[in-house]
Length: 315
Image 1 (cartoon, one colour):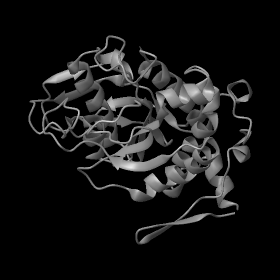
Image 2 (cartoon, helix red, strand yellow):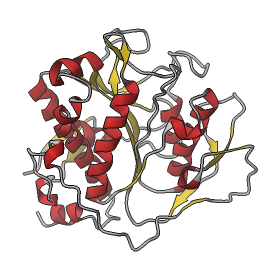
Image 3 (tube, rainbow, N blue to C red):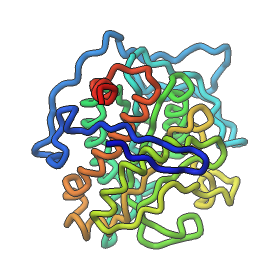
Image 4 (cartoon, rainbow, N blue to C red):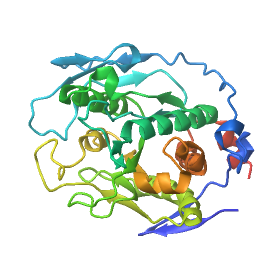
């Protein structure tokens, strides 16, 4: 059955595939039951290469497939002056970043005085990686720890993500976080929401694919999801709480498919699940939904031969 939603002047038809059709139990996605089979090998190598583009870049950071070259001057800081990073794969690409530190620089929301940002971000990366690889994605999991838990480390992490967006077609980057429970000017309504670009053209169809998939989870949990929202924009100083989000804006310059999804307030996760670690099981249907939305986006391009795309084409 196809579900259609209206968004402005566009009507978007949801691709009628399910995780069950891909071999994943639709209602049995709890960790203990989640399939762990190795995804089929790609005929391409998956090699990651920094592409020479005739530019000289002042900075180089990271190792192996997470290496990046970029320039940064402190001016026009929402622009990513970065070398393209090309991935030799015939799979759609997903980036699942870890942006929280253990040193207090960016520790995330607190529950009963304890910061939970890094723990929850780690859980969501693990769960989304498993799902997306099963569906056939090439998944990158860069962490702030790879580049150093410093402001320079954040520059490198953000530029790496932008470099992959610049060097490849159809990249999707999603960060799943736990929000604070106290509002402020930059975040007046803390809780479930999807932070998107405010400086570059948005892909509202992509945003709607994810939102449509997530809707049933929030209805069942009786939680309010305010949907896509532009963060900040009230300061031009990097690091200011009212500034545009550099991780989003730098990558969105090359491809708008990047978002920070606040799953819920951290305290709501604990109230609903019992603890942040137990949120892994509680949010399993949400992880399924987001993975499906990302797969739907990949299938919509007509470029990929994922099994779930083929199943959809047959319906």
